[in-house]
Image (cartoon, rainbow, N blue to C red; front, side, top):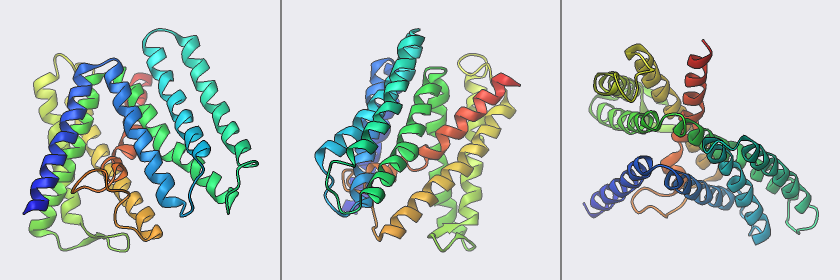
Length: 275
């Protein structure tokens, strides 16, 4: 019972912070995304490298992410040159990170550097795209988060009640096809309801079909995101990525779906603008 209460309070605080940052706008969303990225990268570094990673290498990983996140904010402020400079610096920092491996003593520099680059691809890039979406349409980002949360809720409720057929037993034994369908339904309905509420205002550029399709994509890729993180944890022999969130585990355990949903959402809205 205590664990349920702790988990609920932590979840409400987490959701509240995200919603508050979305509505506050400007620097607030940037700071929140940077915080999530820094914590997630630190967790990922910790679980993938059993050895202690020198502080200078951890700092370079975080600096690379920080430079990348400043790029979309600069673009939003209308400074395209500055945004390009931040992006170039981020790529340069990756080179510096690899050069640093020549001088810092670790047991397996190739493995350690590979995990560092994976962290940038797995964590930094999707959260960078999240900011790119946000500076185009904050309401769409809010809807995307709501779809993720409702997908989780629908999958859990339906799966708990009638789940019998395993979705991916080798990676996540508790997931069922019934739960997956329940999550899809909840997510798609979120898109339909959002169109009914905001279709003529904040989300006027999207039709009901557009938002329903987005709901489907969110449900599918949120599930893939969760499964990929489960694969990482199972491979490493751990239950949670961390313990910073009481009752939930680590930051990666909370944003695993987001890391796959953000890129597909960015592709979706970009494709709509093109065609």
